[in-house]
Amino acid sequence: MCKHNHFIKIFIPDEYPMVKKQPLCFETLVPSVSLNLFLKINTITNLFEMFKNVINELNNFWNVYNEIITTCNTIGSYTFKDVNYKIPIDSHVYVEVEVDPLNPLNCPKFNLHGLPASIEKFQERLNEINPCLIWSTENSFKENILNVFQVTTLQLQYEEENPEHYIANQNDLNCCCICYDQLDTAIKKQTKLCINEKCDALYHMSCICEWLLNSGSTPMFEHLQGKCPQCEEDMLVALENFDLIKT
Image (cartoon, rainbow, N blue to C red):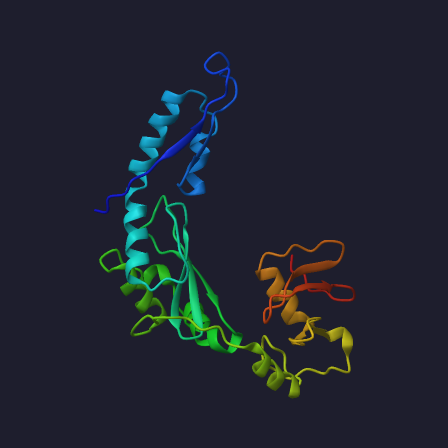
Protein backbone atom coordinates (compact mmCIF):
# COMPACT_ATOMS: atom_id res chain seq x y z
CA MET A 1 0.00 0.00 0.00
CA CYS A 2 1.26 3.46 -0.90
CA LYS A 3 1.83 5.93 1.92
CA HIS A 4 1.22 9.60 1.25
CA ASN A 5 1.17 12.73 3.36
CA HIS A 6 -2.01 14.78 2.98
CA PHE A 7 -2.89 18.22 4.25
CA ILE A 8 -5.87 20.49 4.58
CA LYS A 9 -5.42 24.24 4.88
CA ILE A 10 -8.32 25.86 6.73
CA PHE A 11 -9.06 29.58 6.52
CA ILE A 12 -10.50 30.65 9.88
CA PRO A 13 -12.56 33.88 9.95
CA ASP A 14 -11.79 36.47 12.64
CA GLU A 15 -15.19 36.01 14.29
CA TYR A 16 -14.86 32.22 14.61
CA PRO A 17 -16.27 30.44 16.62
CA MET A 18 -18.93 33.04 17.37
CA VAL A 19 -20.35 32.82 13.86
CA LYS A 20 -20.82 29.30 12.48
CA LYS A 21 -23.46 29.81 9.84
CA GLN A 22 -21.05 29.87 6.90
CA PRO A 23 -19.05 26.80 5.81
CA LEU A 24 -15.32 27.06 6.43
CA CYS A 25 -13.04 27.78 3.47
CA PHE A 26 -10.19 25.36 2.90
CA GLU A 27 -7.61 24.05 0.44
CA THR A 28 -6.67 20.42 -0.05
CA LEU A 29 -5.60 18.05 -2.83
CA VAL A 30 -8.46 15.58 -3.18
CA PRO A 31 -10.57 14.79 -6.27
CA SER A 32 -13.40 17.25 -6.82
CA VAL A 33 -16.05 14.55 -6.46
CA SER A 34 -15.11 14.27 -2.77
CA LEU A 35 -15.13 18.00 -2.08
CA ASN A 36 -18.93 18.08 -1.94
CA LEU A 37 -18.74 16.30 1.41
CA PHE A 38 -17.03 19.35 2.92
CA LEU A 39 -19.31 22.07 1.65
CA LYS A 40 -21.76 22.28 4.56
CA ILE A 41 -19.31 21.80 7.42
CA ASN A 42 -18.79 24.88 9.60
CA THR A 43 -16.64 23.71 12.52
CA ILE A 44 -12.93 22.92 12.50
CA THR A 45 -13.37 19.64 14.38
CA ASN A 46 -16.01 18.29 12.01
CA LEU A 47 -14.08 19.44 8.97
CA PHE A 48 -10.93 17.69 10.10
CA GLU A 49 -12.81 14.47 10.94
CA MET A 50 -14.46 14.47 7.54
CA PHE A 51 -11.07 15.07 5.93
CA LYS A 52 -9.62 12.00 7.64
CA ASN A 53 -12.58 9.87 6.56
CA VAL A 54 -12.27 11.00 2.95
CA ILE A 55 -8.54 10.28 2.93
CA ASN A 56 -9.17 6.74 4.16
CA GLU A 57 -11.86 6.17 1.52
CA LEU A 58 -9.53 7.35 -1.24
CA ASN A 59 -6.62 5.06 -0.35
CA ASN A 60 -7.40 2.63 -3.17
CA PHE A 61 -7.64 5.49 -5.64
CA TRP A 62 -4.23 6.80 -4.67
CA ASN A 63 -2.76 3.32 -4.95
CA VAL A 64 -4.00 3.27 -8.55
CA TYR A 65 -2.73 6.84 -9.02
CA ASN A 66 0.74 5.79 -7.90
CA GLU A 67 0.67 2.74 -10.18
CA ILE A 68 -0.30 4.83 -13.20
CA ILE A 69 2.35 7.52 -12.82
CA THR A 70 5.13 5.01 -12.09
CA THR A 71 4.40 2.37 -14.76
CA CYS A 72 2.44 3.97 -17.62
CA ASN A 73 4.89 6.60 -18.95
CA THR A 74 2.34 9.34 -18.36
CA ILE A 75 2.54 12.65 -20.22
CA GLY A 76 2.72 15.65 -17.88
CA SER A 77 2.70 15.92 -14.10
CA TYR A 78 -0.14 15.14 -11.71
CA THR A 79 -1.29 15.77 -8.15
CA PHE A 80 -3.43 13.78 -5.72
CA LYS A 81 -6.59 15.52 -6.94
CA ASP A 82 -6.18 14.54 -10.61
CA VAL A 83 -8.35 11.78 -12.09
CA ASN A 84 -7.39 12.16 -15.79
CA TYR A 85 -4.07 10.82 -17.08
CA LYS A 86 -2.47 10.90 -20.54
CA ILE A 87 -0.83 7.61 -21.54
CA PRO A 88 1.04 7.18 -24.88
CA ILE A 89 -0.06 4.01 -26.68
CA ASP A 90 1.63 4.92 -29.96
CA SER A 91 4.36 7.37 -30.95
CA HIS A 92 1.67 9.78 -32.20
CA VAL A 93 -1.36 8.72 -30.14
CA TYR A 94 -2.15 8.98 -26.47
CA VAL A 95 -5.20 7.88 -24.55
CA GLU A 96 -6.60 10.07 -21.80
CA VAL A 97 -7.99 7.80 -19.09
CA GLU A 98 -10.44 9.05 -16.48
CA VAL A 99 -10.40 7.05 -13.25
CA ASP A 100 -13.40 7.07 -10.94
CA PRO A 101 -11.88 7.93 -7.52
CA LEU A 102 -14.78 6.22 -5.74
CA ASN A 103 -14.40 3.04 -7.83
CA PRO A 104 -10.77 3.15 -8.94
CA LEU A 105 -10.47 -0.54 -9.82
CA ASN A 106 -13.26 -0.33 -12.39
CA CYS A 107 -12.55 0.19 -16.07
CA PRO A 108 -11.80 3.89 -16.68
CA LYS A 109 -13.18 6.08 -19.45
CA PHE A 110 -11.05 6.45 -22.59
CA ASN A 111 -10.54 9.44 -24.90
CA LEU A 112 -8.08 9.10 -27.78
CA HIS A 113 -5.92 12.03 -28.95
CA GLY A 114 -3.98 12.40 -32.20
CA LEU A 115 -4.68 12.96 -35.87
CA PRO A 116 -7.72 11.02 -37.14
CA ALA A 117 -5.61 8.76 -39.35
CA SER A 118 -3.41 7.83 -36.38
CA ILE A 119 -6.18 7.11 -33.89
CA GLU A 120 -8.45 5.31 -36.36
CA LYS A 121 -7.36 1.74 -35.58
CA PHE A 122 -7.54 2.35 -31.83
CA GLN A 123 -10.99 3.91 -32.10
CA GLU A 124 -12.15 0.95 -34.17
CA ARG A 125 -10.84 -1.34 -31.46
CA LEU A 126 -12.86 0.52 -28.80
CA ASN A 127 -15.95 0.38 -31.00
CA GLU A 128 -15.61 -3.37 -31.55
CA ILE A 129 -15.18 -4.40 -27.93
CA ASN A 130 -16.62 -3.66 -24.53
CA PRO A 131 -13.55 -2.50 -22.57
CA CYS A 132 -15.31 -3.29 -19.29
CA LEU A 133 -15.34 -6.98 -20.22
CA ILE A 134 -11.59 -6.96 -20.91
CA TRP A 135 -10.59 -4.93 -17.86
CA SER A 136 -9.58 -7.25 -15.02
CA THR A 137 -8.76 -6.47 -11.40
CA GLU A 138 -6.31 -9.37 -11.53
CA ASN A 139 -4.12 -7.44 -13.97
CA SER A 140 -2.09 -4.32 -13.39
CA PHE A 141 -3.36 -1.02 -14.78
CA LYS A 142 -0.66 -1.13 -17.45
CA GLU A 143 -1.54 -4.69 -18.47
CA ASN A 144 -5.18 -3.71 -18.82
CA ILE A 145 -4.29 -0.77 -21.08
CA LEU A 146 -2.17 -3.05 -23.27
CA ASN A 147 -5.01 -5.57 -23.51
CA VAL A 148 -7.71 -3.03 -24.30
CA PHE A 149 -5.76 -1.42 -27.15
CA GLN A 150 -3.92 -4.57 -28.27
CA VAL A 151 -0.44 -3.07 -28.03
CA THR A 152 2.64 -4.89 -26.78
CA THR A 153 4.18 -1.97 -24.92
CA LEU A 154 3.56 1.64 -23.97
CA GLN A 155 5.58 4.32 -25.73
CA LEU A 156 8.34 6.05 -23.79
CA GLN A 157 7.31 9.38 -25.27
CA TYR A 158 4.60 10.96 -27.38
CA GLU A 159 5.35 13.19 -30.37
CA GLU A 160 2.58 15.36 -31.73
CA GLU A 161 2.27 15.06 -35.49
CA ASN A 162 2.41 18.17 -37.66
CA PRO A 163 -1.04 18.26 -39.24
CA GLU A 164 -0.10 20.60 -42.10
CA HIS A 165 1.33 17.96 -44.44
CA TYR A 166 -1.46 15.54 -43.65
CA ILE A 167 -4.16 18.15 -44.20
CA ALA A 168 -2.59 19.37 -47.44
CA ASN A 169 -2.69 15.87 -48.86
CA GLN A 170 -6.29 15.42 -47.80
CA ASN A 171 -7.40 18.75 -49.26
CA ASP A 172 -5.58 18.20 -52.55
CA LEU A 173 -7.98 15.30 -52.98
CA ASN A 174 -10.94 17.27 -51.60
CA CYS A 175 -11.41 14.71 -48.87
CA CYS A 176 -13.30 15.11 -45.63
CA CYS A 177 -10.80 15.08 -42.76
CA ILE A 178 -13.17 13.01 -40.61
CA CYS A 179 -14.50 10.23 -42.86
CA TYR A 180 -11.83 10.61 -45.61
CA ASP A 181 -14.46 10.33 -48.37
CA GLN A 182 -14.33 12.81 -51.23
CA LEU A 183 -16.58 15.85 -51.06
CA ASP A 184 -18.00 18.24 -53.60
CA THR A 185 -16.62 21.67 -52.69
CA ALA A 186 -18.84 23.25 -55.34
CA ILE A 187 -21.82 22.65 -53.07
CA LYS A 188 -20.70 24.96 -50.28
CA LYS A 189 -23.68 24.26 -48.03
CA GLN A 190 -22.55 20.63 -47.77
CA THR A 191 -18.97 21.42 -46.73
CA LYS A 192 -17.24 23.23 -43.87
CA LEU A 193 -13.76 24.78 -44.07
CA CYS A 194 -11.63 25.54 -41.00
CA ILE A 195 -10.91 29.28 -40.78
CA ASN A 196 -7.33 28.68 -39.60
CA GLU A 197 -5.17 29.44 -42.67
CA LYS A 198 -2.51 26.99 -41.49
CA CYS A 199 -5.12 24.25 -41.28
CA ASP A 200 -7.79 24.72 -43.99
CA ALA A 201 -9.29 21.33 -43.12
CA LEU A 202 -12.41 20.41 -45.10
CA TYR A 203 -15.35 18.47 -43.70
CA HIS A 204 -18.70 17.15 -44.80
CA MET A 205 -21.25 19.30 -43.01
CA SER A 206 -22.89 16.15 -41.62
CA CYS A 207 -19.53 14.81 -40.38
CA ILE A 208 -18.46 17.96 -38.54
CA CYS A 209 -21.92 18.39 -37.01
CA GLU A 210 -21.91 14.82 -35.73
CA TRP A 211 -18.36 15.32 -34.42
CA LEU A 212 -19.32 18.47 -32.52
CA LEU A 213 -22.48 16.87 -31.13
CA ASN A 214 -20.50 13.87 -29.88
CA SER A 215 -18.01 16.29 -28.31
CA GLY A 216 -20.79 17.75 -26.17
CA SER A 217 -21.75 20.80 -28.21
CA THR A 218 -25.38 21.86 -27.75
CA PRO A 219 -27.25 23.53 -30.64
CA MET A 220 -27.89 27.19 -29.87
CA PHE A 221 -29.51 29.72 -32.20
CA GLU A 222 -29.24 27.16 -35.03
CA HIS A 223 -25.46 26.87 -34.61
CA LEU A 224 -23.00 24.38 -33.14
CA GLN A 225 -19.86 25.67 -31.47
CA GLY A 226 -16.69 23.69 -30.84
CA LYS A 227 -13.14 23.16 -32.06
CA CYS A 228 -11.69 21.95 -35.34
CA PRO A 229 -10.73 18.25 -34.93
CA GLN A 230 -7.44 18.93 -36.72
CA CYS A 231 -6.02 22.12 -35.21
CA GLU A 232 -8.46 22.87 -32.34
CA GLU A 233 -9.26 26.33 -33.71
CA ASP A 234 -12.66 27.60 -32.51
CA MET A 235 -15.34 26.63 -35.01
CA LEU A 236 -18.94 27.77 -35.49
CA VAL A 237 -21.19 25.69 -37.74
CA ALA A 238 -24.57 26.96 -38.97
CA LEU A 239 -27.33 24.36 -39.07
CA GLU A 240 -29.53 26.31 -41.50
CA ASN A 241 -31.16 24.09 -44.14
CA PHE A 242 -29.89 20.94 -42.43
CA ASP A 243 -31.87 18.38 -40.48
CA LEU A 244 -28.94 16.99 -38.52
CA ILE A 245 -30.20 16.98 -34.96
CA LYS A 246 -31.54 13.56 -34.08
CA THR A 247 -34.41 13.50 -31.61
